[in-house]
Length: 341
Image (tube, rainbow, N blue to C red; front, side, top):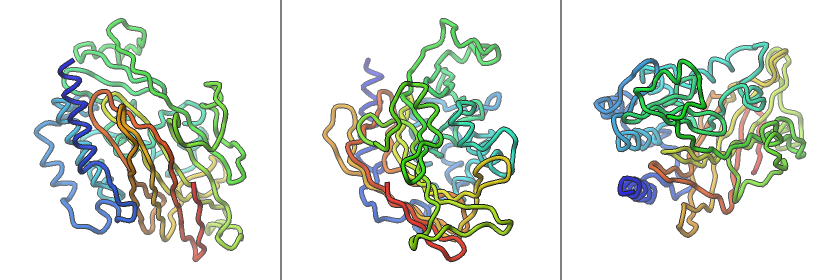
């Protein structure tokens, strides 16, 4: 019990200081303000982080929280640099590989909606997971599935090899998660996970909203269809909000993406000349009154930009959204599109 209290207090302390960005108008971390390079961060954490059998191993829970605190400072190219140097093929890198070209089995979002691929909307957390959703803290291995986190002793690594998820040595931590994708008119276009859980597809993103919500925009601010790609493929703006709680980590954030309609594989990443997102939310931690968080991010010649509005590290963490609003915009071939969630 003392250990649990220690990490909850640590998490609340960190979240109330550097971890929570209280100014929604401030620039994204690393976007314009000077900061350390990804190599500097690697040097700062490398003593407590190693690689074993394709997964990251954090020496202690404190080291895991320290690493996640450092990663909050990164977005875009800087996070990509750290990810490329961390010694594993991460879930982030796997997403990029899948969305780089047309594939018969579909895009990342489609595979997630069909529960054929693990969906982790927070790119900071996805950068420490390997492609199987596995990492290690101390002497415990953690495997993220879509609706639960499996935790078992590192000496029982054979569980990973055998895939025996009913082994009595496994602790099962439930993850409340749904994936909902809607077009601007409210039409459900990818909510299979929510339907399988018997939940109603709605645009609500407060209270018990957990998971990944996105909405699509196909017209610019003047009501004209967004420009096509050089090879005559349709494009769209995608606005995203998420709120997910894991065993040691919880986060709520916003993202703007730009995509094109491929010939066979569905919607794939497409670079826009400018992408921007900002969000403001009223949130609660367990047992605390509501407080306001905010953040923003922008990028050029990219297909995605995101901001973690709030995150907490440590055992027993969770975030409940009281209210939220986010603004998403893009410029592509001179056309501006905007969407508010």
